Amino acid sequence: MDGFGRVMLNLIWIVILVLLTVRGSCTRNEDAVYTAEVEGYSEVIVLDRDWFMVGFRGCDVEDAAKFEIKAVNVKGVKVEIIVCMGYPFKAGTVRVPIH
Image 1 (cartoon, helix red, strand yellow):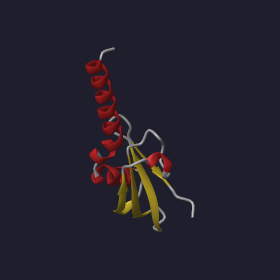
Image 2 (tube, helix red, strand yellow):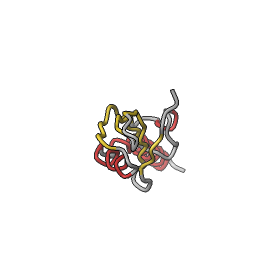
Image 3 (tube, one colour):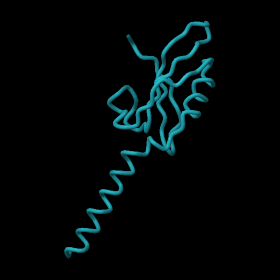
Image 4 (tube, one colour):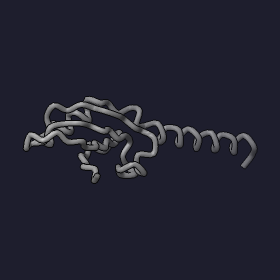
C-alpha cells in the first residue's frame, strides 16, 4: 500500500470512530420522554443527558445516549429512571437505577 492509500485508510478509520463516538448527540430529549411515557410514567422531566461512553454508565454498549429522568410511576410515586436510547437502529430502554 502506498503512502496516499495508507493516509486515506487512516482518515476513513478516524471518521468512523468520530461518528460512532458522537452519534448520541443526534438523539432527542423528546424521544426519551416518549419512551418513558409509553412505559407508563407521567410528569416526565429530563434532568441530564450523556452521549459519551454510555455503555460504561448504566446503558448497553449499543446505546448512543443516556437520559436521567425524574417522573411519576404508575403507583403515583416520584422516581428517577434512566432511559437509554440507541441511534439509529435501536429504540429506547427504561432502566431503574439501584440506590
